[in-house]
Image 1 (cartoon, rainbow, N blue to C red):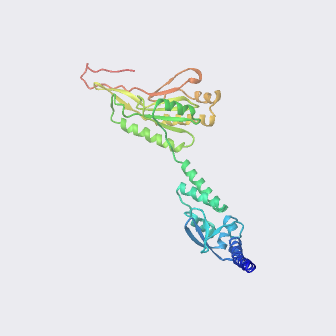
Image 2: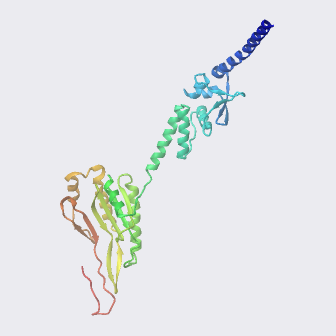
Length: 328
């Protein structure tokens, strides 16, 4: 009895081994080499189902080609889907690139970075270069955008100008200063100064740092900095003595402002360092221009050219003998 039972048990084990061994061998063979003889491939990428060909997946020397030729083991479910543990949001874009050799990329920078990550994971170098080129184009576009810092405190201004390596042009615009009334064309001239500031920002973008300041007592004043120190200043306001009251007048010395902006370019890329750069600025004509007076604060290299508009003298409209004339 025991011999027969032993023989029967041995036969059962042999039969079970004969059944299980071929099944395991076939599954392993299909997992590693089954895609070589297939024309179509079913892919399950993070729950996103895709149906394509081995020819498409093998167009580039990538992870997908390695999966097709058996170089990379993958999991295949009972229904024959190749399961890839990866988000399938951008996998369709990867497939379309393999099919056509080019594909429209998303304009959103974050989505473009996601596509780049997927291309790098699947080792599709053509798509990687396509994404990098698109990101470089976006960077070039962003760099052409003019960014204008706004001064919020004197400490912030000092820190920013001292650390900036480029020339700095600052427009102080404080229309809220209503100590005196304004002349009829002051608002127009104030807008002209602001418009000139915007034009200069566009023209010298990348070469000069333009800053707006809405603090302080000056209503409209241009300041020019090089290598962390003030080089010149153009004040665009003056006091007008009208009938029985003082008025503030805003001027628009466009030519002088543009001239000082060009002068400050000598400090671009550190070219104004040393006595040579200062000599070029100080050797120009320092005579006062029409309608303006210029003050120089001597002191060697600490000299600052200050240009102030001349004070306008006006008579009041009272009768003869009662008029008051104000002089400089």
